[in-house]
Image 1 (cartoon, rainbow over the protein chains, first blue to last red):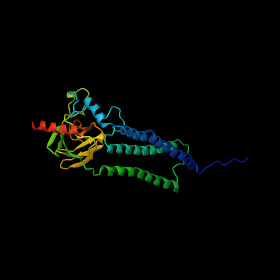
Image 2 (cartoon, helix red, strand yellow):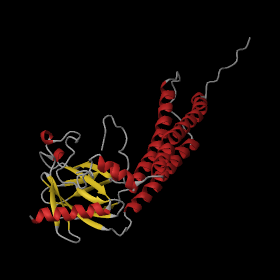
Image 3 (cartoon, chains in turn purple, cyan):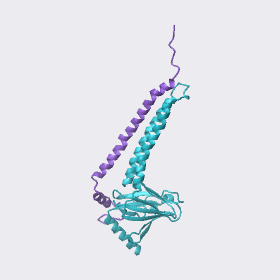
Image 4 (cartoon, rainbow over the protein chains, first blue to last red):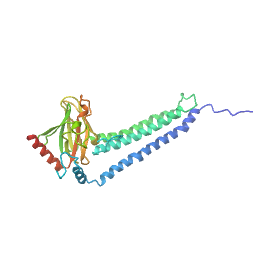
Length: 76
Length: 232
């Protein structure tokens, strides 16, 4: 009876051809996850914050809270 | 200011700092990309029963792992250079302030119109009012008009110091005998804290910087008041 000769060459190459595409795909997923989970929300948060930002109103709120030293609350 | 268990940057209070934030996110995304790739490869290389894994010859993979890092470096360099040139733009400042580092306090000079100068010492912990921040508060704050381009000239009178305000994205060395120039615009009113960022002796950790951004009319009232106080 004859046995099938097992593969004795190219084993590392075969392993790499299997794992490297998965490695690249996972790293792209990680990058995309960070981009759409952190980067884009942060950009949106800043855009949203400044879209309707009323500097005068915020300044007055901070002034009344007594945060500034150059400008005291209007009661003082 | 920073808050406990903070991991990232402070909220940006100037357009330059916003750009730096977004660039950092971009660079960190690339770092995660490379780290995931390398970690996966390490685990794959370590978790194999193959013994003959150190002799490998492949032109294709050599080309890939030369070209790909070069492309990644270009993807990092282009936004980086963009911000670098953005920070250097001539922006026609409305006001020039000189910040001088001393052991161990800062002094500020507003000499565009009148001769206004004052020292800014840290408020000792035992003298803090309730709600004030330990090691961050100063007795006299550097007041600036909000949303106005400001030029700041930084130097030192004795040893090296560094004038840094993270929320504004500024850090500039204060070198004796040298005038370093930088510029900033505050996007919103508020109070922004920083600390000396170059070792300068025993009280290096105790010479904070406080920038207060207020509307122009209040800045003008404040500077008139400071000039009156100085003349008394």
